[in-house]
Amino acid sequence: MNQDMSIISLVLEASFVVQLVMAGLLTVSLISWTVIFGKLVGLKRVRGLNEGFEREFWSGRSLTELQQAATSSKTTAPMERIFASGMREFLKLREKRLDGGAQLDGARRAMRASYQRELDVIESNLSFLGSVASVSPYVGLFGTVWGIMHAFVGLANLQQVSLATVAPGIAEALVATAIGLFAAIPAVIAYNRFARDIDRIATQLETFIEEFSNILQRNATQPAAR
Picture (cartoon, helix red, strand yellow):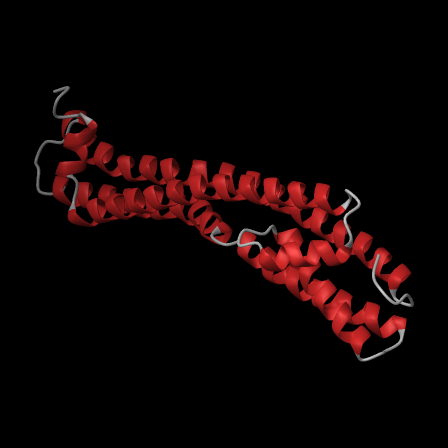
């Protein structure tokens, strides 16, 4: 009896539709765990690169040196790429001898565009986790409803129905809900954690844009920046 009611037996004896739902949920769960681990590593790397560039930025190096380093380096932080785009636009407008306000506005627009591109990259796959978190329980519930319906249709042909005959079919169906929750719960936790971390990174980048804009404003009327 214990062997017949084991998880493996319940999965193997479930109807084809329920097995299909289980297989889909397990596949989605595997993909979401891959995304979770990749996101953990990626966000940690982004934070480290941003902090490293921020230290360099406030260390007293000139803007020209920082721009050359950003251009020549193969591995750059999102904050560094935002800086490089703003600095490049600022120098380009300065060569055209536009007034200081136009130089600053152009640099800010360039940094805002770069900021949005960087944020889109950082937020990649976050919507997938949100979808898994919200949809998986309902997919599992669909498998359960289908399994219970299939079990009761099979019991309709029996003359005597007891708990022993009903329990296996219902248990098989409930496994689909359990797998749906198994896929959804880690995705919910990871989505909330990553959304909070990304908000902090976004705030850090926006603060840098404002601080760098203040520096550019002070240099807008000078012959050379900083």
